[in-house]
Amino acid sequence: MRAHAVHLPIHVDPTLDSTLQAQIVAQMRALIEHHLLPPGAPVPATRDLGRQIGVSRNTVTAAYEELIAQGYLYTERAVGTFVAKTLPDTLIRSPDSIDDLRSGAEHRALNLPLPYGGRGLTGLHRPAQPGLAADFVFGRADPRSFPERIWRKLIVECLGGAAERMSEYSHPAGLPELRQLIVNHLATTRGMVASTEQLLLVAGFQQGIDLVAHLFVGTRTPVVMEAPTYRGAAFLFESYGAQVIPVAVDAHGVDVRQLPQRRVKLVYVTPSHQFPTGGTMPLHRRLALLEWAARNGAYILEIDYDADYRYEGAPLPTLQSLDRNGCVIYVNSFTRTLGPGLRIGYMLLPRDLVRTAVTIKSLMDNGLPWLEQATLAQFIRDGSYDTHLRRLRTAHEARRNALVGALRTRLPEVRVQGADAGQHVLLRLPESCPPAVEVQAAARSFGTGVYPLSDSPVWFHELLPGHERCLMLGYGHLAEEQIERGIEGLAQALDSRADSRQ
Image (tube, rainbow, N blue to C red; front, top):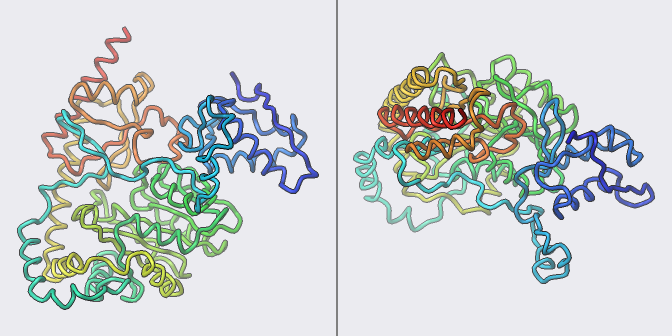
C-alpha cells in the first residue's frame, strides 16, 4: 500500500485550547497504541493528510517530526513515512486491554514523575553468548589487555595511606591530582588547553551524558542528535522530556547543512568516529558546526569515545580545542582503554558551566570511589598509561588489519565503513544478500555472532539508507585468529543462504 493512499480517522478542532499540531500528534499516538495503525504500516503523505483534515502541510510535517522524535514513526527517503517497527514498550497496549483504561496500573502510570515511557534495557550490557567461536558484539573489552600485574601493585601502594582518604567523602569533581594529570595528558596528546577546574570526573560516558541532560533538558527541550546514534543517549534525553530532533549523517558525520535554523539547547555529536557508521568529521565541517552553534546559542556535546584509536592519518583537532565561544562540552572515558568496569570518565566544561555542573554532580553521587581514582592517577603519573596505550593501539590495529583482510578475501562484495579508527566497523551487505536479521541467525549456526543495527545499541537506524542490510561488528576484544574464524563463519552463513534460495 502506498503511503499517500491511506486515510486516517483524524479530526481537528481549531476552537480547542490545544494546538492543531498537538491534536494530530495525540490522535495518531492513540491509533498506534491501540493497534489501529500496526507497526510498519504506512501513514499518509503530509500534503494528503493536510488536505484531508483541512490544515496546512507545515502543521502536519511538524506533527510527524514530533512523532518521529518520540519513536512512533520513521521515514524512508523517497518511499514514505511509516509506523515504527519497534515502539515504546510500555505505551503499546494489547487489543484485549484497550477498554481497561481505569485500572489501578493505569492510574499509577499517570503519576510517574518522568515523561519517559521506558523502553526496557537501553545500555550496553549484553551477556556473553554461549557457543560462539567469534562474537563481534560492540562494546566489549579484551580482558587479556588489562594491565593486571601493575594495577594490583599500584592498588597495594595506594592502600598504604588509604585510611584517612577512605574515611572522607571525595570531592564531587574528582581527585584533584587525577584531574590535573588528565588535563596534562589532553594538552600533550590532543592540543586541548583547559584548567583543572574545568575537568570533572564522572562514572563513564553515561553519567557524563546524564549530567549534561540534567543541566540543559526539560520537558519539550529540543535536542539535536546524529541519526543514527547511540540509543542510550537518545533514551536518556527522552527520560528528561527532551524533544529529540534527528539529523541525518553522511560519510563525514552529521550534515551541518541540515541542522535546524532555530534555537536549540544541545547538539550531540561523535566527530572522531561517528557511532555507528564510523565516519570522521572533516575540519571544515567541524568549523561550520561551531559557527552554527555560536549563531544559534547552542551547546555542543562532543563524545570522543574512540579518539585513542586512529589507524590512518593524524587525529583531527577536537571541537573543544577549536571552540572560541565556550559552547563545547567534551566527554571521554577510560572505558575504551582500561575497561568499562573501571567506571571513570571525564568531561571538560566551559567555565560558565563548571560551578553548576559540580553542584549537580554532588547531588548524584558525592564523588567517585577514591581507591580507583588514586590508582589511576599513579598509573598515569609513572608513565604506565602511555605505555599501555601504545600497546593497545598496536594490538587493535593488527586486529583491524585482520578483519579488513579477511573481509577482502572471503567477502569482497561487502562494503566496509569506519575501519580507519575505533574498534568497530559497519558492514553493508549487497542487495543480493538476505536482510541482516536473517544473516545474524544463519551466522550463529556457524559459531559467529554478528549484529544488525536493530539488535545493536543504535537508535534512528531506520533513517540510514540501506539499514536492513547493515551489520555492526565490534572487534577490539577478539584475537586475530578469532576474527578470521568469525569472518569465515559469516561467509559460510551467506553461502548457505544463497544455496537455499536456488
